[in-house]
Image 1 (cartoon, helix red, strand yellow):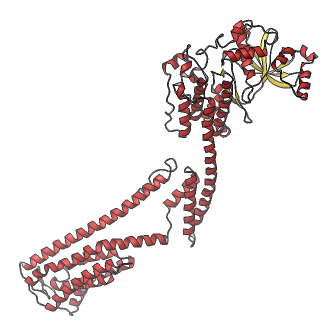
Image 2: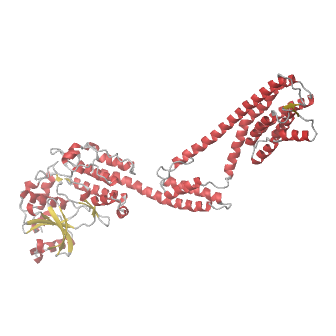
Length: 626
């Protein structure tokens, strides 16, 4: 307990009446002054042991509370340097009156052993918390989310900045020296190797004087005394590069480096440096904070960590407060992100409900599906990692509605009209190409000029109906062209009969119309495609038409009605017509293939875009693939 004179020296400012009364009461002679050391403090339980002292929980018999009592280790008792360092630590810590620095109540000695009393703090060290998190402890994950640890580190930054403003550099900041309480308390422990500006330390000694019962050389307690010189103190894993050299000048930026190393450990659950000794740190003084592949760490935090641990002190944060402000800005943004996630959760819940309703067959199923997609979009816009929204999205994409929406039907109809518009000019040109063979047909010899004329006119009519039917605005009108082409091919059967040349021609014609008409029109086109073959055969079998084919032994003779069948010209016609059908068929098939490939390409692009809509970690890749 300090003397009355010491107290007056320490506080010369006028005090309010209540404060004066309390001070008179504290300084008044009392039988309590006779009880000191082990008489006043009753040991309760050991708390820990360090290189210079051991700490235990003791009950203060005067005030009836439990405090922490730190006593100088037995082998250092009587050692001037050890005693000076012990007293120095107590005085440094006592001057730093901050909520995150454990307050010192008393510095005295009992039985020749120096001791100090301070507030007993309860909780877990950050080192222990990180060990539990790294081990996958679920309780620790729930109790210490990253936001809480970052907030605690921000409090440490402010406490350290407070110390820096008073000329004190901690020099041994590390997770084991940071205590996290159960009620949000954060404490910076162990100021035993702190470096203090000599002027500030001398001023502190002059103000406080020597503690009662302890004598030591004031010079030995300065920043140059004992083991407190720059470069000789600290923990290798957290020491700044300039701390590694004993003659280097260490300032507040060394603590900033240690804070950056602690931040790295909070983010990765691994130390920035793995060196266990100074020799190992000298061998590898640098570390890349961005070697964190596969970890979900925000870029802002990595940037803070990288700046704080820069090798050049001038490139670090100018102060611990600057580092706090950077962390605080991130946490402010994180708070907004939490609000976004909460809002996203509401939209995702609404999407789940709408998606369940969309599975019904009712008339409102499409409306519910549309509502579900809107809610999914809103949820993913606010939180791209929302699991419920991702599940709904993938479910909706994987299970399309049984009935296509009206918008989809309209789009398909528009594209079908466009396909007809693209193909009909080529089909019309193919019909008209048969007129090119008119001289060859004339050369074959015409038996029925009426049939030949009608056939030529029907070819012209079919080409015109195909061309203009496909070019009409709105839905294409290819029905008349289908009928005209069927009649034309049927009359063509009078040239060589229904079994020669006609089957190939009618098959090509049928394929074209089936691909251009709707389902009902395709059925009609298929049925009409059989007419040029069946109708002449039936009429000939019924005697309504003269027979086209005559059989003599193993020979089949063709009797043409419209033309004569001269050698040379007939062969030329059949060759040219057959080659023409192959070429026309290849052209139409190639155009069909282009249209199909274009549609498939559009689907693939849509699938690719949908894959990018969903985060890589949110769903297995491969939308739209077999």
